Amino acid sequence: MTFTSSPREQPIRCGIGLRTPHLAEVMARRPRTGWLEVHPENYMGAPAAADALERLRADYPLSLHGVGLSLGSADGIDADHLSRLKALTHRLEPCRVSEHMSWSAHGGAWLNDLVPLPYTDESLSVICRNVDRMQTALGRQILVENPSSYLSYRDSTMPEAVFLAEIVRRTGCGILCDVNNIFVSAHNLGLDAQEYMRTLPADAIGEIHLAGHARNEIDGQVLLIDDHGGRVIDPVRALYRDAVERFGPVPTMIEWDTALPPLDVLLDEAALADAVMEVRHARAA
Image (cartoon, rainbow, N blue to C red; front, side):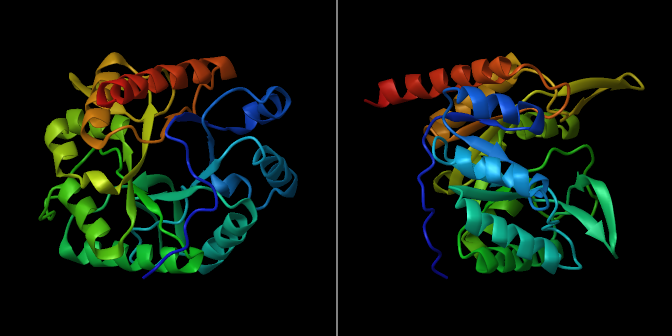
């Protein structure tokens, strides 16, 4: 299937996740950052906020990062949700649209979480069907994000990275590589983060996410929680440097959702990621 290209290029720089508490300040200051990412669910039923985003489009490329379509749901994706996403996409003309490799809805019940899938042929068929439906409705390629995991399924028959690469092969979608999620999942499940990245098709990586995470101790074991509530820690930043070495400089985003700091903290984190990409650019030149 042939998809239309994005109306605006996504710069190979680091952007920030624009959250509602920062919206007015960004509107007033127009700070220097590569691009802005928002959750479309926050704007589908909020005309005034969507109007503000439309004005910001003059200065910043936008990316829509969905959290509620439940691509892994065996029930299929919700038609009304997809229709609202399509309308917002046509209005804002974002450079990218992405969703999660997870599920959050079943039998009319919605979970306040993104639940990982069992990595089986059956669930692969389900999510590929839903990705195809989403891409057809939007008329464009989407990116699918790797999850943060806290458990694994006994019935899984393939590694997560192989599962994600197969989605790409079957649907033509791209990958949103969340480096923090790889770090969290590798710690929690005993995976090899480097092997994970080596398994992903480098030419499918359309975007990278960076975030902070929390450490919880349970029965003497440390569990990492992907809470997007702090600065990027040094080991995650080192893994990001490895990702840039493998995939090349890729549009990157600082994701921060809990304990939201002042806007300048996000901008500082973005500058640190830009510096990593600049080093890689210089070495390549």
